[in-house]
Amino acid sequence: MVTQYMEDTVRPSDLEILCTSSCSRPTGSVALNYKGLAYRTEWVEYPDIAPLLSRYNVPPNPPPETPHTLPVIYDPRTRSFVTDSTDIALYLDRTYPDTLPLMPESLHSLQAAFGFALRASVHQALRPLMMFPAMNRLHPRGHAFFRETRELSFGCKMEEICPPEKQAAQWACVEKAFGQLTSWFEAAGDGRLLLLSADEGRICHADTQILGLLKWVQAIFGPDSEEWRRLETFDDGRWKRFLTVMAKWTDTTH
Image (cartoon, rainbow, N blue to C red; front, side):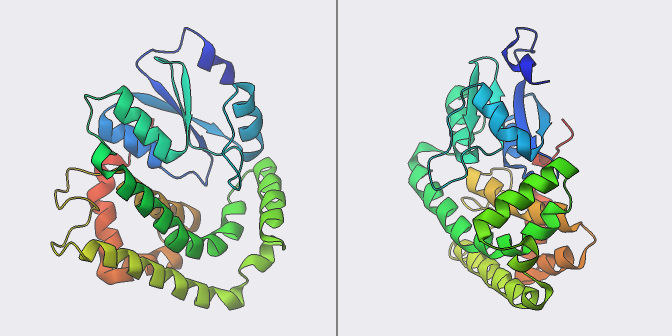
């Protein structure tokens, strides 16, 4: 499967997007769907990410980030691997200028600041709640790898990261973080659901980052779970409406 990335038999019109299995977030696929670019998805188990990317000399992420992460895209037109969802959005804008932009040049700084704030608030609040159920959705090899690496990261057993007696308080932190996120949108004063525009046909990279977090929760807990139903009620149902607006670009059947 992997060797085909460097073969001439790869269809030149199709990009490859590499994703982890059950924990994948759809920012890369949404970007490609929004731009109308043909692609196909290759699913990669957690223990195989670093060997695969190292094999093709894909540079690691700078410290303190995890050295090798997904999603990654491979573009056979330029024979380029691109890592990190923000760098992917920038690459697609520059390489395919006739498609709808995700990161207009005048807004690079704004979107970079937004991404940092989103990780520091919503992502950090969600992360303790997500680790144990995410691990349990993985295949055996991925499960063992995920446990080992996350226990090193958190400095405790997976079962101790957010045990049942701490989950109510942690969900309160998540709701507060989403409330803060909502306040950033409400500052525009026009009822928008998307970050940069009230036009629901135009999205930006920041919108795909929010979508990635929401779909992560939905995928790990399940669309009929108590946890997901609770999140849908946050901020008077804003995030359920947000998903409805984004639905046209969230097809991940490629």
